[in-house]
Length: 422
Image (spheres, rainbow, N blue to C red):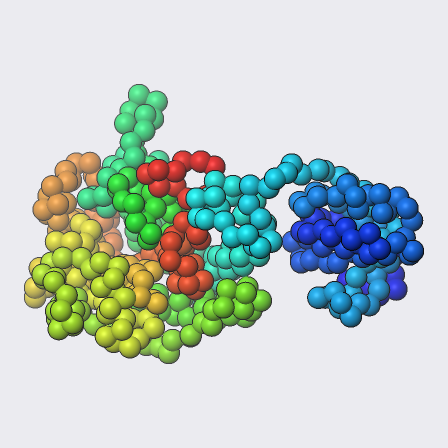
């Protein structure tokens, strides 16, 4: 509105705040673009405007017609002197939470009244950043000639094994919600060459932790004629692209959240799982070879290395998914990697097994029946190149960038073992 000084305009939005002082009355009107001050001085506006101010409450929806004038008091440097005010919709009082943030609400209140929380500056900052993460992810892979895939959410058998599945009745058959698009993106890679996707996935694990949900969004990629090192190079370049994009597009949001993004230099440091275990032991951590790292241990590794982002590679085959390619000289270790950023795992991937016989053997070693994966194993019988890929967790990257400590804070409508609404 700054270029509209002297002009008559019509603006509409929500009442962010209102102060009726008699001689001079103020309201802040908020829409998706920001907040504008509407000022009504007793001697400068019609009586009907003063009467309208007496009826207005926070979060009412208004349309205001008036003249844009310069202001030394208003934050934006301009204000609107109203000639007409239409109350489009009234809000009930009291509000379940304060969108101004003057009275902070606890996490449960913010989750129970999600739509109202979305009206806060904090929510707008978090989810603008999250939106731009997805934009940047897509942009990176489109520019690198990957094709976007749309894998199914309803599947016949486990995508990864291990993790519990949500079962459902699919007509007269038993089916499951996908815990990963893994099998399908591999089928895409060995046919199309390079693919990516943005998909919901479901994990029926009974966790109640600040970094876990039962429904989440994955940003996946898969590439043919590639090994685990190729996938790591793709993942680190994608991460830098995302961070640069968010830095450029979300300057205001990052400033509000008091975040300054560090863009890591490539290539990122790579350490083996075995080296990571030894580092932790030296710092007094009780961990045995073959155990996964806790979230606190991931943070400790970041401190030990002095790196904002790094890879842990060459994991024990036993604790990675059945499709992970074992090392030729040591089958106890597989070509798997995790990408740690800001002390948090945000991406993981592997070189996949592309040999049907080895795949069936690894399925059996995980106590899975190869017959349940026949359609998948058969894919690799008709000319399958080596291939690798990875998966970013959208919510995890958002946590890393925004500095939030609970994944529910950066999920629009979180689903965990205790929450299925709103």
